[in-house]
Amino acid sequence: MINPEVELFSDTKTRPGKAMLEAMMTAEVGDEQADEDPTTNALQKKVADLLGKEAALFVPSGTMCNQIAMAVHCQPGDEIIADKTAHIINFEASGPAVIARASIRPLDGVRGQFTVEQAQAGLRAGFRHAPDSKMIAVEQTANMGGGSIWPLEVLESLSELAKDNNLVTHMDGARLLNAVVASGVSEKDYAATVDTVWIDLSKGLGCPIGAVIAGSKEFIEKAWPWKQRLGGSMRQSGILAAAGIYALDHLVDRLTIDHANARLLATRLAQIPGVQIDPLTVETNILIIDVTEASLSGPEISAQLLEKGVRMGATGPSGLRAVTHLDVDEAGIIRAAEAFANICS
Ligand SMILES: *Cc1c(COP(=O)(O)O)cnc(C)c1O
Image 1 (tube, rainbow, N blue to C red):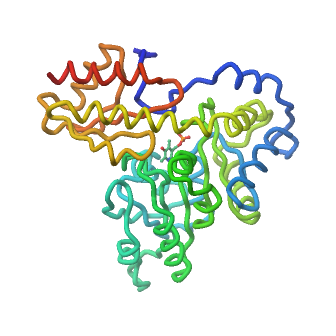
Image 2 (cartoon, helix red, strand yellow):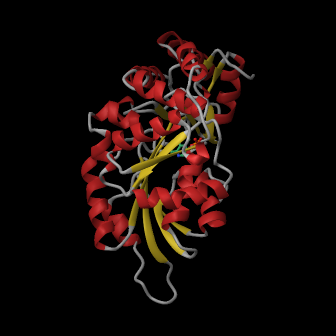
């Protein structure tokens, strides 16, 4: 099924609305690679200001932001500390091994988050046979941690640890704005805890394409050749950047609706026998649903939901993930919960 009626597979499935398309159609454009695209320049400035960083760079995807950051920050043979569920470990086709040629030390965190003590214990002793610890990477929010929000104090402590040990810090902020809207902590305060940070435009913000990475001027200078090398340099990218500007101006505050819908879905699903999800742990727009005790497996439930016009992805034999976004309303949530209940009864 290409377009199920209730799409909860991912917030990447959003489609640009009419107003966004109009902004794209009327965008002023030029050659991005020569810094001559005014709309791309405006988006980059807007995101740099939003995040309190010196400069920013528009690239086609969040994955490319992570790959560029790792390539700029790390020498081959360096090591990156990340949670075991991290996107850079599980969903970037071994990019760190292929592109930055860095190894990753996965930490056994809870809901996608490790502690400062775990990070400290993960640092290498600096002897001949050990990798060189170089970078601490966090995801705000933690995707496979069920959209959990890293507390500001933990990020600040990690930043201290990194400074004390000459490490760089990087934030995969695919859903940073979800964290901001849910916690009330500002973009700048979160971003101040890391050297580099990016936001995705193609997730909950509803754009068709794009992500923006921010950091020091020096970092962005070094990021450019990587963007070019990876084939991420564009031309009249203002058409895409215009969607990003529109989203940042109009679609951020409404993320609270997605969070309320996610909590509603969790509350409904928690009532189904054999289904485990604690609604209190649903902080943003992602639910990781445990069906270990249900009569059907995650993939079986996913397949049967699809027959009823509802899509959720299985995360494994006993789990599903549901993600709310601007193309799912409360009626869709109720319909999804009812379909889930019918299947499990
Ligand atoms: C989606 C996602 C990415 C990758 O972003 P794309 O724009 O799809 O390449 C990276 N990290 C996290 C946490 C994500 O959810």
